[in-house]
Amino acid sequence: MLQTSGLTRRFGGLVAVDDVDFSLGDELCSLIGPNGAGKTTFFNLLTGALEPSDGTIEFRRDDEWLDITNASPHETASLGIHRSYQLTNIFPTSSVFENVRVAAQAADSGRRSFWRNVNHFERYREEAYDILERVGLAEHAETPANALSHGAKRQLEVAIALAGDPDVLLLDEPNAGVSSESVGDIIDLIEDVAGDHAVLLVEHNMDVVMQVSDRIVVLNQGAVIADDEPESVRNDPAVQEAYLGGYTPGDLAEGST
Ligand SMILES: Nc1ncnc2c1ncn2[C@@H]1O[C@H](COP(=O)(O)OP(=O)(O)OP(=O)(O)O)[C@@H](O)[C@H]1O
Image (tube, rainbow, N blue to C red; front, side):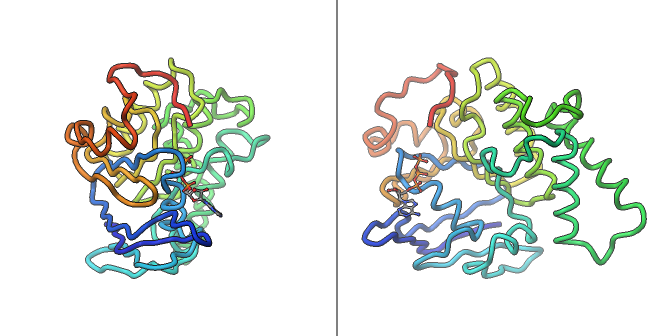
């Protein structure tokens, strides 16, 4: 569905993403690695927020591979690649419902404006309510976004990303700052969303990663050092050394960044 070949991004002399060959199918793949490994830069390359220094990015739509290496964020979004942004795309004083409705409307005007009809506003409302039901925020529909708990704000970010009607969802630390009691809700949401979307997840909480992932890709200093199913990645000596040294399974603790 999405693949990169030799993807590289340099910042001056620093190689933040280093010759990455990666593919995402219809699965939930987690991207992990130590601070500064290049995960955010890789997300920014996939969405078009940053231009690569080298390499290519391709996206499959219908049966055709499209070269999206130099696509803008607007173009990647209209193709169906959406990212959950940590709080930055929430309108804090608008209601939860309004945030999702506006996102549904914006996505529609980017994608399907030609087909809009007189009932489209009602459709955005229905879409927004359906999504709020799905992410567990229906009872907070009229709450101003800035009055939500941290965990509920994360759910709202996912709701806004879903409103874009994505094929590929890039989830950026959906557990960051979430209390340990709410981590289970976010896990349920990630697993639910992965049922009908390809998902690439950046997440520091290893228990979450081990529980939800079909596959894990490990970045270290910009390069892929492992790409395998969770059990194999956990037992990989190179991954242990670079990242998992202190990890013992079973502690669903608060996500850290
Ligand atoms: N705009 C930029 N200009 C210069 N250097 C940058 C820029 N963005 C990122 N970097 C550097 O690129 C490297 C990779 O950073 P990146 O944020 O992608 O890592 P990360 O894996 O997401 O880290 P974290 O887990 O801390 O979020 C780091 O050394 C970072 O300092």
